[in-house]
Length: 238
Image 1 (tube, rainbow, N blue to C red):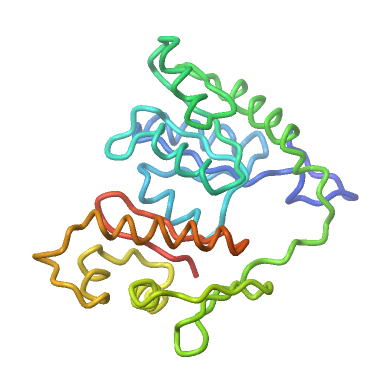
Image 2 (cartoon, rainbow, N blue to C red; image 1 turned 90 degrees about the vertical axis):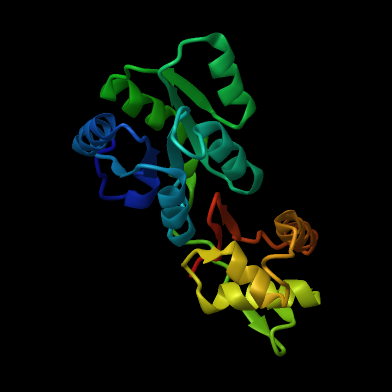
């Protein structure tokens, strides 16, 4: 289904696929079956593991189980859809129409009902990949942002001509994240970095600061890869 062709790019033919399901048997069965069919697929057991992998290397397609422990598939889909261009396939063991509608409303491109035959899943991936036109992209890779803090940490740049002057709180927040790029930084550590008392700080204000930073970056034409790890903190990719 995803066989190689000498005159075409392997990246274009075979999308990188991340599958998230906390049912280990199902996850391993699907990963093994899809791999045998020629797909480049990696499995993860929860949202945090997915976000770590996605921050390091974004996939073209993500397959999500709705009923995940912790952050569920609907929340993950909404988060990815809000800032990323990615194909989303939702899998659910619940056949109610409300669950499928909820999946589509939260950003899913396709909703499948478990049990899922690996051939059906592979066909859905192929159809979605074609729809997203990844196989039409030219072999030349697009420029990737090279994020950096310059001018004493007060200016955020993506290396593509876009720059954003930071507030005091944003400068301290990003400074801490940049020192541990690729790793999750706990909320308490970020609050301390901003000079606040972790015992007297309204943690909701941290989310407000991050949300405002994302919005200001978007206005500056910068797609900020700042990911929230639910229940832990934030991560800025390498």
